[in-house]
Length: 377
Image (cartoon, rainbow, N blue to C red; front, side, top):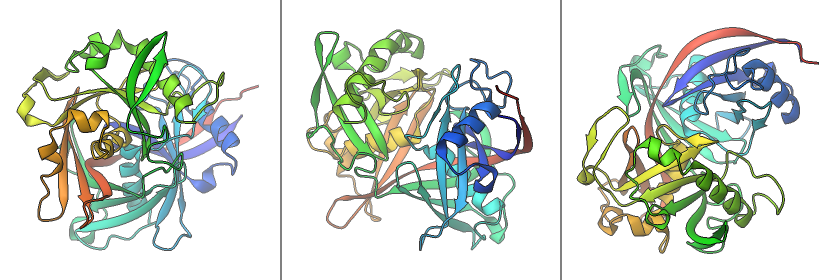
């Protein structure tokens, strides 16, 4: 692999993503993977010979195309680029990167600013989920910088509200691919109850109590249980039909994490969070490490699971939260994460069914770059 790619580097939420126009990339995913692996230097754990950020939240990319689908502005293929191994995952989606894709679409002329806020409708090629983003465009102008912040970063960006539509069963065809709200997994001879759901992305949630934990442990303490959580992900992958017996599961899906009812805890930055300030605790795994915050698709899946009767998320959250519908037929679910509280907005139909789910993000373009690909024999 040798040549050059032109890309744009964006911050989206708590992630960084390299974004490429589709005509910059080969047509086949196998060849796209080779190009991204070479560009990021993914064979090295430090990604020293490429543009990767050497962490799961900064080793991401998307390939963006104008859409021919009526009512859809752009489509994008999300890629999680390997670290320490020349592999690229196309099995999931990323809400943080979706916010960057929406801003990219406006800044690169794929969508024209239409008012103080511009709607960008996107389809994620990995899962076929529809993502609707509302980007701040004050004065109908293309934004360059913004002043909004979100939990997980004090650095400002342009406000982008991201909503996910038609998410139920997007990857597997079933909202509950294991057949029910809870399933028992055999992990090294022990049975562990988990809730598996396919909503935005396949996800698996395990109760902190089931692991002998509170859910409010410091990240360093949770990291000691990482191998157990990765084993749960592998078992859940087979149970959800995402991988076969003896087949290596994807390190990206299902998303896996520990959930618990609210309790007082301290964030990574030292901020004290009271149990009354949020509704459910979540500590997620990202690839082979703990996520420093929470992936947006994980937040979406968790909020959706809270509305499934009998699920672990439903049991962990106070039922009054799910009934607290405002005048816009919307419920706010506050998720306690290592960096603070992330709010997921759940919009309901008049009949009370989940219609779409969203989060507030910020985005910013960091750079344009011509990336020289190394010669790989």
